[in-house]
Image 1: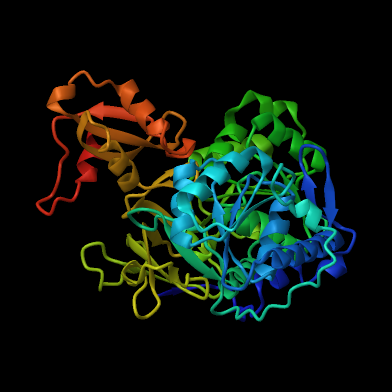
Image 2 (image 1 turned 120 degrees about the vertical axis):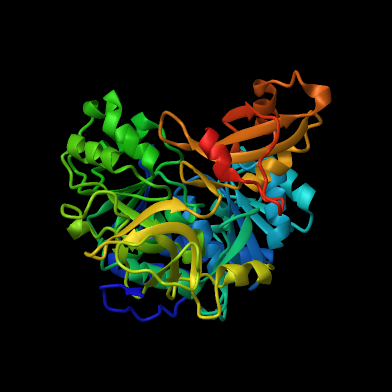
Length: 522
């Protein structure tokens, strides 16, 4: 068993809104949230006051403890207000990809039993359609303004009393993001207030931050990585969060220069852009102190090229998963200059890890031996919503969570992730379940069978590659037809990017697709 070098941290027995904003009065007029495009700034005093007013407005509208509220929005300065207001009103927040199709959105609404939606005006039509498909949604609120919908902005003037809700941090679910886990379709991951808040405390010794630090939030808040690293963690410590709604390289670089960003949390495609794009040379990025990459594996040579170009310590990696609130490993900021290339870091405070043999899961492995990573700690999820069997398959009776990732630990305590047991595809940090795409492909009348695997393209992004068996009656089915069929039915990040026609999908006697054989062909 491997244990963190850091001292254990006590569990944070607070609702997430209090765990994050407890020091808001102390930080006072320090900037908390800054719109990276127009400069709109909310101070800590305003964030604290505004989210309480919105909580009162939500409670007046009928939001009660135990309700689920779907937060469907790109990054804006209003997103954290909506999140903390909802949890203060007693709701659990299920975060929704803003580019989800109405059908995908409706599935999440139905599975989570969400009664309320908070969205933004450009997405209100998709939210309405999703609510119609799902049923059971009481009301759709907007952060800005849209005809026929109550606005969170209007709630800032609420004279209703702030709701006082009895929240049990250990049991009550604060966030309900959706994850495909190691296999299968997306599932609601129940993360309690204590699990999320304690994970923040676990990360603090390795990645210290505070007033004067400026963090650029370009990765989405709806993703657990963004929710923790870019929203909860910096706001808990008094840093300023500069918010961008999406990644556009020129806007991103201008925000670093104009707002004097000190810390970047990114995914590998952004590291690639920083390392190679000619536009980088046109901006002053000298305010940066460190870069941390997570959500997908980062090539060690690419990391070195990025840090060399920017004159920074080597890009540090972090590791985790939605089911782990999400963090378990990070390269400590102070150790970035000396950490071995390619490592995902060291175990954060209060975290234990086992590495077990892929051939014999009861056999524990030692230093330098690669096997599946198992994690135990206070950040392990409560479970999958409504799926006790899948929860039990993921977390054993002793509390060890199977990550589905293959890795090893070196003599210095550094962890390296080298492969995935699980079949999940990670496209720019977003999870894509092959089973979901395969089920969709099989609805095409011209497709007899299909399998989807991840394959790296020329930009070093893992993309869905579909291997398709044509029906005998559709031998003229083309690659472009398959690509379009999927693209019209899924969010952009789930699109199939490559198609290969084959005679038969390789399967084991049990019927399981032999994906390794397909990857070998690729």
